[in-house]
Each structure stands twice: as C-alpha cells, then as structure tokens.
Image (cartoon, rainbow, N blue to C red; front, side, top):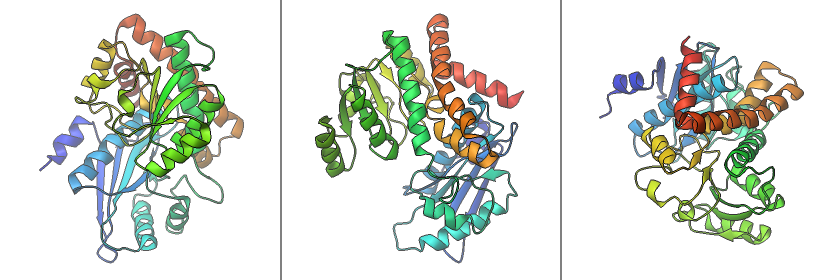
Length: 343
C-alpha cells in the first residue's frame, strides 16, 4: 500500500481531493500541486488503471509536471491534474462527467480542468454545465492538441539545431511512438519536411494505414525505441525511458510529446552519460497548456502563437546550458521551475 503522505511529500504536493460518487459509481482524484503563481490548471485523464494506487501516482506525477510546465512557460498558473478511473463494467459517461463537473466546482476555482488522455470535447461540454472552471470546450476553447504539435515541432527543430547544427530536418531519421492526435499530426508534418520516419502504435491497423499513406515505415510498438535514428519522439503514455529501455536506445535526441517520459530522475543522468540530448517533456509539450491557458485567460491569438514559438529558444537555452555545465537538461529545468514556484 502506497504511503500517500510520503508520496505527496516527495513531489512537494499541496492538496489531493478524492470523490467517490455513490449515485454514479464515479471515482475521481484531483491533485493540486502548487498555486503559488495562480490557480492550478491541468487536464482530466479518463483511462483504465490496474488499481487506485496507480491512479493516484499518475495524478501526482502529472500534477507536478503541470506546475513545472506552467512555470517554465511563464504562465500565471499553478499545476494540477485530475483522473477519473475508467471502469471495466458498464457506466454512464454523461453521468460521470456531470458528477466530475460538480466535484470541480466545489474547489471554487483552485483547480481548472481541461482536455487530456481519454476525454473528448463533448465531455468538456457536459462538465461545463456544472462548473465554469474549465479551459476546454467545443464552442470556444477548442482542441489544444494542434498547439501541442506546434510546440513539439519547435522543440524538435531546436534540439536538431543544437545536436546536429542543422537549420532544417530534411534527410534526418526519426521514430514516433504513439499515433494519437499529436503523433499522427507530427508524422504528417515531418514527412513533408523530408524526414524518414519509423512509426508505431498499439493500433496496428492505424499504423499500417498511416505508413502506407505517408510512404513511411511501420514497426512494432515494442521495437520503436530500439531503432537507430536521429530523433526518438515519444507520444504515448509515460515511463518509456526506464531501466529496461535505457540500454536499448540508439537515438541521439529524445524530443516528444508524452508526459513523464522518464520513470525517475536517474534516467536523466543515464541519458546524459550516453550523450543523448533529452528535451524535458514539460518544456517541449507545453503548447497545449499555453493554448488552453490563453483561451481561459483571454490572451490574444498573436500572444499565444508567440508563447508557443518561444519553446524553440527555451529548448536551445536549456540544451546549451546542459552541454556547458555538464548537467542533464531535466535537472536544470527542475531547478528553475522549483525556484519559480517556491520563491
């Protein structure tokens, strides 16, 4: 059994809220990491978990990442995350979202919810009938994933500039793990940029179709991280860089959209020792947060676009500092973010 207080102390957490709805059966967690810079904004994840401990750990790790992501993007927001444990038995999705909306509303704006893995804009529209504290909705806010894609592209370009001293991507070889909204869009953009791609997803039919359409190469999901390539692009769920996979990597750069790519900080040092440039996830994938925050805060489109473009210079700065100081990029970013949210 996980020691909850030890867990939240390790991640320097402020608050965790639980909701067990007797009427609908919904079980939800809202984890608020830090509100020093503003209310905690973070998406709602609706996926299956083996047990509640794994759901709590996911919420805590992702919530901390959102705090760091907002701080590094210079947004007036804190970080949090919400999880609804998706049941295996039949349930009413609408009732779950209504109940979750009421749950969010009880926190009076300390937490702002948004789209995430397993949720759709239609879910956000239902939640919006119970609370005003959300940053995703079909009638105004829209889908943040295109902005995530834009930010990841800026990060990939910056990493390739640092690692290969290239102003373009043409002729490079990259491997994309995960072909959801972000991974699929990246595959299309990178193909147009002249990149040779290996692509993989647990949906084999989708992988084969996209590979044929783009005239790229489909590979098995369990092999994608082992391929020799210039850039490995994780766009699936987290912890892809772990004790088992670290020695199988044959890339020079890791720059992808997935959250919590490193199972723990020891992997940052291991990548650094292998001379693999790792772009910290909560810098490179901040485009979606920037977009959602901008819509919620009523930021102009031009300013949102500028903030997303700034990911390029941020990745350049952190990567060069990592090289000059011989410190993993993740360690540097953690230090900067913690200073911002704790000062």
